[in-house]
Length: 200
Ligand SMILES: [Zn+2]
Ligand SMILES: [Zn+2]
Figure 1 (cartoon, helix red, strand yellow):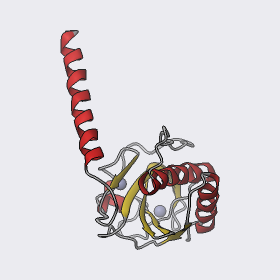
Figure 2 (cartoon, protein in one colour):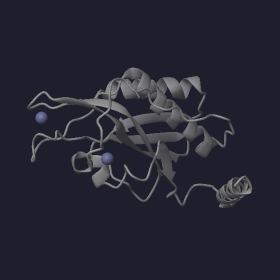
Figure 3 (tube, helix red, strand yellow):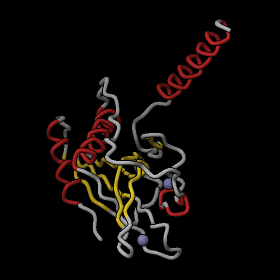
Figure 4 (cartoon, helix red, strand yellow):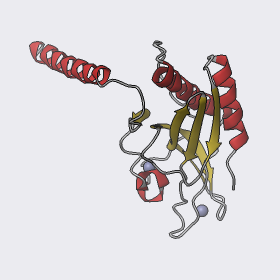
């Protein structure tokens, strides 16, 4: 079973154009992609549905993880992506399935991705808020960690909706904004705590 690479690529080039990202950007799917030392690592979770090729059982998950590794070399940007599979719980040793993601969820993930590219590589300062996935149909009760490829790669638990890891030493980024963000968060949490106790 193959994923619909064409839809992802097309959505990506549409968004790059629509949001007027400079340079040439392309997106490739690599189903063996791993975290690596260079590039901006960015992950998201979306909603997808699975169908077992053996027993035809189907299930939905809102923990479909997508990993992106983003690099910009002069004017040429490259995004590699991997979508993580899940296995059917009726079989112990079993091929894992690629999820089907609807076009509007692909659009949301890609929109978040391209906004991330604009902020990180072109210092665009917008008020964009990441879009959450659209949920279609009932979700499975508990997330089955053993049957989730992303869990085995340590990608599922550390994210709520999307996150990034800064690993690119070549990137022109100062530490100051990150420190300010952390300080801001600490101050925020402290003031919420104070408010909480003040009301007690
Ligand atoms: Zn099955
Ligand atoms: Zn998982």
